[in-house]
Length: 245
Image (cartoon, rainbow, N blue to C red; front, side, top):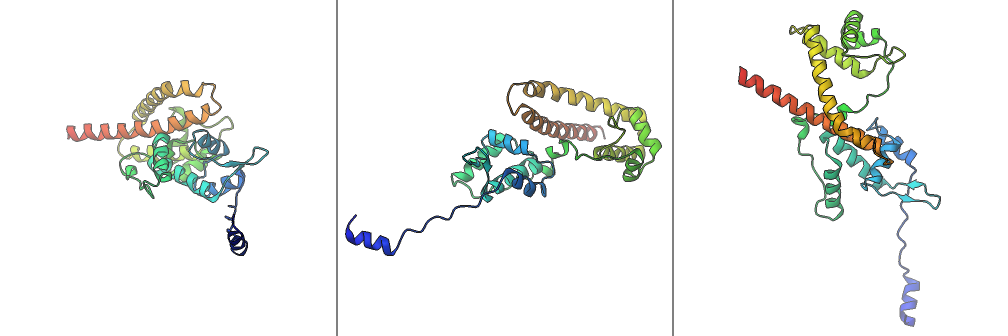
C-alpha cells in the first residue's frame, strides 16, 4: 500500500460491521411461545436438523440465535399453523427468499378450504374435571359421562380431561339437537378411529426409525396428514350430500 493510501486509511478507517446481538434457545422459545404456545426446544432443534434454520454456535457448542433467526422461525411456524405447509415447500419458499427471487411469500388462503394442521397437534395440558367440561361445553355431567362410556372422550389416569374433550362434548351437544343419538355418535367415533389407523400405518415406520428426530418428524407428519384427511373427508361428505339433495 502506498504512503498516500496508508494515510487515507488512517484518516478514514473502514467502519466495522456491528456484531448482531444473539440470544439463547431458551430466550427464543420464550419469545415464540407468546404466539405459538405449542412450540418446544425439540421443535426448534428439529427445524435446525431439517436445515430450515442455521443458528451459530459458541465454542462450547451452544446455539445462539439472531433476531433474523427468530423471524425465520416465526415465518416457518406461521406457515405450518395457518396453511399446514409441508416442510419441503417451506424450505423452497425460504430458498427463494434467500436468493432474492422473492421478498415475501403470501399465503394462498388454503385455510379457507382446508383444516389447519395446528388443530391436530397435542392439546395444551389442562386438568379439567367432568364438571368443568360440562360447564365449558354448555352440557351436563351426565352427558359427559355418557360420552366417556361410548368412547368419544377419555379422562387421563387421574380422571382429568383436556380442552379437546370440551370441543368434542360441545360438538356432540350440537349434533344431538339435530337428532344424533349415542349410536350415531359412536359411529362417527369408529370412523375417526379408522382414519387414525390409516395415518398411523404411514407414520409408524418414521416414528420407530433410529433418527434422533424421529418422534418430531412423526408428529409433524401425523398433524399434516390428519388435516388433509379431514379436509378430504369433509369435501367428500359435502359432495355426496349435494348429489343426494
